[in-house]
Image (cartoon, rainbow, N blue to C red; front, side):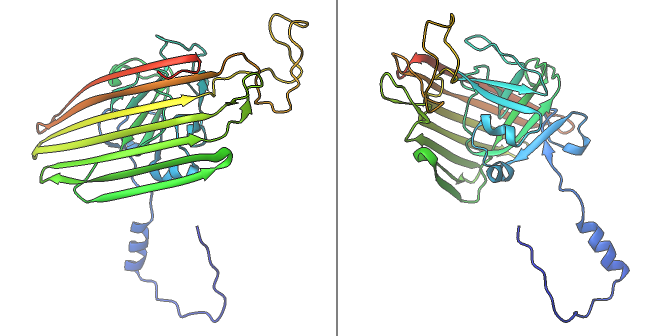
Length: 327
């Protein structure tokens, strides 16, 4: 934000009239925030649910690139990477259980589709319109009970206007992040888009002293998503979405805190004296590898007083943890 102060001869003031005051009051107010916390578009001020909403502009300004960095944008929410699994905690409600088959009490949805896999929920944001976090127990309105709340991600919907956006960033440890978005009208009643994001970390935060390889490093963070919107009639809309993502990282490495001993106790392993707290000493290269993808079809049918919505989706993900191998 830029602010300026003008000093000098006072300018003549425009007479204040009743019409001027009325216009100024009309211009002052809160911007309407539309949420879907009850499965329909509503003004956030009229929804009887504790919901925090952040837009794409806010996420970009705060540097939020993935689900684990939502902590800086949503009060009361903590999301951590638990050995390759997303482990959210909302207002003190969460779980320390991770692994195949475990579902977190904080559910994650993308465009109305439930992400049951905790490893696939550990995602980077791509083509985001806004994110809503519903705090407190949620019923089956979204598909399953969630005792702690839910995270609902809404991606951008393509329009007939040709659109192109892109960004590139470079940071410490040779970290690169880039994304691109292309969208527009394909046919008179068909709009489509493609969004791609790619991340890479050239140097790890630490080193595996046994193998000499870097650890705590992201080798690839790739995602692509395409959304097609068909409007065959004024009261009918079909939305088809397909996505794919891949993540390979050695950030699942664990090391000893300086001054501590490894299990089962003193005398087994010398105390950790690494100069870099991110260094580890293992005879294998730790890491995680995740691939996830799917497709969904949403049908919106306006029936006058009622709006019929049908969401059908298929998702598949694979995950490996331990010895760093491709999936």
